[in-house]
Image 1 (cartoon, rainbow, N blue to C red):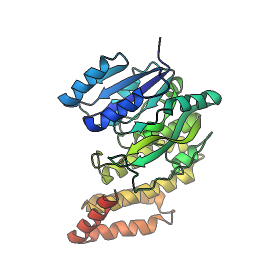
Image 2: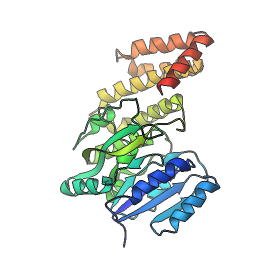
Image 3: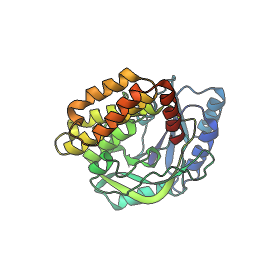
Image 4: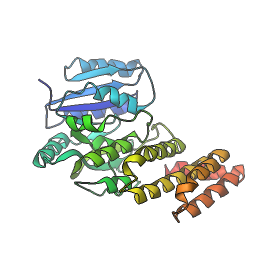
Length: 310
């Protein structure tokens, strides 16, 4: 018989984080699940651990050639999911023991809702509270505006949805990597009402081993917002234009700080035709131009500040 929940977990090495993540799945008070681990070409120590897990009969290992794109890896697992629900867990995060149980109970109590997310704790590599504050505003029902404007933060490892609903929304867009989750949440919000369990049922790690840099993240965010343009341009055009303006000027600033002067100026020119109407775009654009034209020593200092904040 198919399990009630299919859990999708992508991984690439980082065994010291992976083990606690998997243990948090086995500790769930709701026990009718399958764990689908899509491995993005890990080395032998991680593979040996994953093969040991697979022998338990509750874990299915999907070995893949390394791509470095989590959207590709997650989709490989999603295509094999059999459960009524699909839940996501990143390999460096943790679940509280009651996470699945509470989320399923809440979804079943609200049959008009198609997907769900929860609150979270932000922690460092040692599971101590992280000093970065991330806003969480629980929203339910139609939440397109809250997702688009980042009024609330939906973390990957908190999301659960009906598999039948995922067949309507489609999988992750494999052209994206760092922001493929945001683009999928926008599609989910457009097609179905959301449920929210306002409890910190997920522990989200922030550490020095995350892949990608701020330039790559900003580029991916810009692409995700561009992909959302056809679906959102009618009702949500004002909010979408503002978010695209903010994303473009943030990208230009990051490019300038990293010495990509021409790219920074090109980003500003490409976004000017829709962003000029946003008054907050102008000071940001001026700052990006100043950074692009600044001496190398100033850019290096600014880069150190960005890294310390990240």
